[in-house]
Length: 400
Image (tube, rainbow, N blue to C red; front, side, top):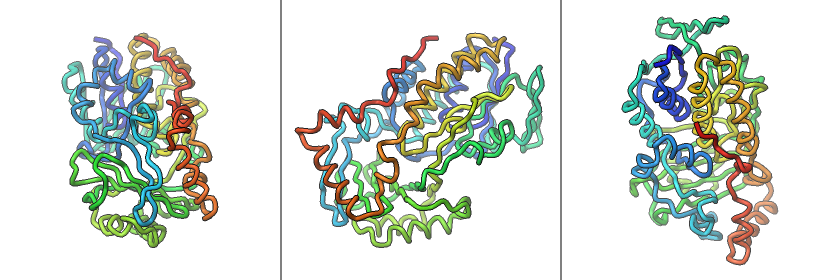
């Protein structure tokens, strides 16, 4: 056992992944999670390329396989539900919008929690608590928690999301490091509407908005995924009533299954809404605080790489700490050096970003539908596959 004691803020995928690897390396871990219990369900996430390799090395794939979604691909439909393009997972070799391995965020987190429970080692896992203050010096970090407890740690890992409170304490206000990407996203569970093809995600776009319905493991339910292109409105943060009103206003004339989606939204118990935000940090470490996952390098859900960055980042951070637990400064420097090339490509948005995805002009929207028909045609599909190749820049995962 090492005498190094690491505090992890955030019990999501990034936090649990780094805790798992640190425990396996014999490092003492305390993890605090603001929620009172693990959050089930959530949006589907995928593993491909380096993130799949990291998950394999961490021994997660067997658990992931037991929970993965049976997704066949993506269908594009118009306001009457008529299909105008189809992109299967097989035709894209698992590199398209739907990957070979898709799993809900909650299920992936549970796979990690199951492994954490089996890892042994010294672990203090606390729900319903979070960091309120951090005082650093050359010898360590003194932390005060919302519960009133205090503790001294060799390192604090901020893995508490895009709106990280820990990052704010150590690095400064969120506004210094975030960029609004001209939109919001929302998702929640709904009963699967009649006519939705089993195993296929279906998407319908209107001017400035998109409605998608994605299958769950249970065929009776699906996830509604909403994307809205609109100017930033800080008043929306935390105001669920205003968030839902914005969605109603932007999807009022959407057609297709939008009325059922809006009706379900009113009473959805897992309603989620947030801005599409990018996080760019000048450095991932400030003294004895280091950033991991969305807290340090969120590219927004539009990249489709958030989970990949969390898993790869956790693997690298834990590997470097375990390599030199007595030299944490050196470990953090190597972590940043090794993860940065992967982030540089993983954070890139698809061509045109939200402006191309959700055009505000009928002419541009019509051109987009025509282009999608061409891109999904058998003749052009080889070129389309190249366009969707994994965004890893040839990154090679180091072996620890």
